[in-house]
Length: 364
Image (cartoon, rainbow, N blue to C red; front, side):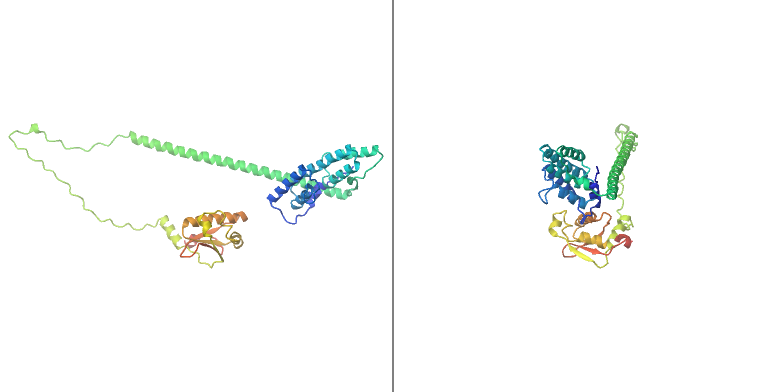
């Protein structure tokens, strides 16, 4: 008895006309499960499990998740064949099995049910011609076996890739825990050193008190001798000197402030996009998606961005939203952006030719 590997062949030879998104493929799989549960195996038209299996194969020929569902679909038909055979309706039983031979020839129990049906027909002196007996020649069978092996290799590759990603995630988690433990130990050591310094300072002897002049003893003075007043010198207050202004130091902070003040984008704008005032005021996270094609334009032009805003806080917030929006399209895209205070007018974002370094580096 020949076994036609039609399932693997269909999975690997179907050419998708338009790539479906992962969400759409998940919906198709869920639809196949629902149709099988409701016994919508091959009808009604355009709303049955077979149509969805065929569509999934066309959209994702190397996605093996549909294989178990195709077998489940075939097992449902095998069960229907068993019921029809028990009632003596051998023609209907063979029709059910023919559907399975065409779509999922490796369905568990299919060959056993075909043998049982053949024996039932032989007992009545009848003979049925099953679809499995009119299959392709040996060359076609060999090609389908090769495709089935390729599908199995692809399944193994995906499993190995998933295992690799799992190991990487475990390694990263272990390294993070190690860094956190080292940082905790460092902070604890700093705290111990701080407390030891405080204890040492508390245990140090107090400095000696300054000598105080002895008071006059009245018993040492004769009664008939007038008491002479003790002369005391009052310290003259130190003259107040006018504080001289310190020269401005060329500190890194002062230098950075000067460079930022001088940094300007002098190139001609490639495009300008107004910023929706209401979305900016409410800090709506979908603001970038509401600004037309700005995210795609930034990537296509590899543009540097100037954000014209009244406040730097709004500028920083919008820069984050634009960055996230662009990276959802291209994770490798790096956004270069700068701030330009508004001199009247409405907030906007202008796209400029690409830069290889920041504006402050160019000024420096």
